[in-house]
Image 1 (cartoon, rainbow, N blue to C red):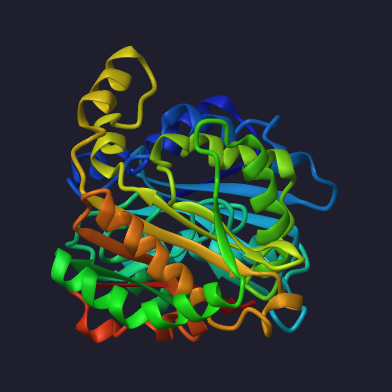
Image 2 (cartoon, rainbow, N blue to C red):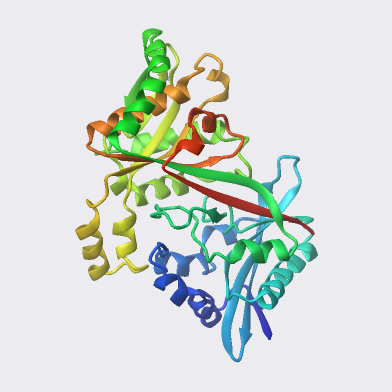
Length: 375
């Protein structure tokens, strides 16, 4: 077994990206990330590498001259646990179903983080929470959605046997059928009506020219998510670029702002049309043929992905109930559009929003985990 490490090397980067690609491409439930995007993330001009205090190292394991596993270790100067402890990240993980290979990979990554002064590591996490992170640990047989973690079923066990333990859980729940959605609407309608009677309102983002509203969402989201595990700063331009890439999944009324009388916009709710089949059709490429495949499949889904919601902390008490009101309004818009599935995505276990839904009564439940290890 041979271990190779590098920071920037074009030839090794190609081998790194190829490792695990064939298996993922053969998985009908995997949404391949765009190859041009991944290639850029391994080049020295990628923004993460140019922030003072950040560092990284990529690792490959070869057997018989063939790459059988890969992992990256990241020092992110802004990544900290809730107790203030600096956290290293272990990401870009791919590995064959062999514990010896996994142990070698994860030991190499965590040893490097320890030598860099870190005493705790999270994984899987590519750079930070603004990139891909977490494993899916339950419900992987369901239809995927864009940004959902997808991984080989043996990955969580490999992390656990290498000394990692679960740090945080998330869940996604699917509600299917107009009758089920109408029931959820009736449950959430009273608080919506009480808040609107007090003068609170919703304002839809302009989906035809959304740039200004994207920037407003940036200014609202970071304070609202300040206590979210691992939330690190992101520039306004990088945040807006993330939303631009998903602009095709916007629809009128699904991205909106919660407005408090005499205070203006104090909260937000963000849901997106499900474009999973169209993105899968790209097959990780971004050429003319891939774009045509995307266009042919983009209208196939009748599912809405409810992804984000929040309110500025200083307005949370006055706007109590705005989460339930936001759910009602999103369901109302989804049903009006003819959608018959709503997937409430990536709720962190322990988050108050989770209490709005009878999770065990959902048509599908999915679970995800972020792991940690003391170094």
